[in-house]
Length: 211
Image (cartoon, rainbow, N blue to C red; front, side, top):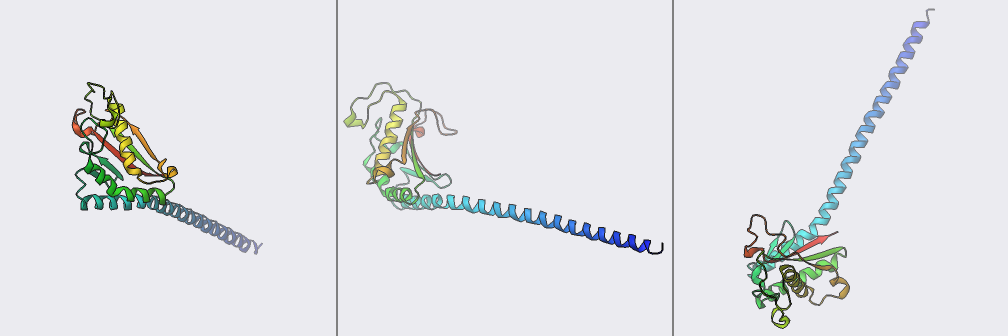
């Protein structure tokens, strides 16, 4: 009978040891989970950074080229969105034809856009045309003079985007040029805070994307 207390003490010590081991394993599991989640977040951020950096780099290069050539009055580079905006002044009035000055401005950055497409095989360039909401009063049928025929704003916006695309393509091979996509939205997307009839809505936006 005298041995029983020591037996209970031994059992309690054993249980305490088991509990300590279990607590240690639990703590290790929590630490490991936290480390795994941290590693995942870091890898996700790294992947995101690697995806964004090429866009930031080319956007800055294009902005520098436009500024040095005094072409930024015609073409604006939005660094945050990696988006070029060809303002209304780059086209002849009521026409889809690029002005001579605009052609020079587009050609100055064409090489950068070409390199972007060739270096990143999953990249795309979206060329989107927009207009104000002033209706087309008379259909335009002289293609030679206006680089298009149109009787509404949607057709004009698409034609302007198409002409901008031609200037961007330059000497690109056909398969690469397919990744430059055109769309015309007419007066459906005026600039935020701008009256729909304002001339600033007449523009072509060139969006660089990486998928």
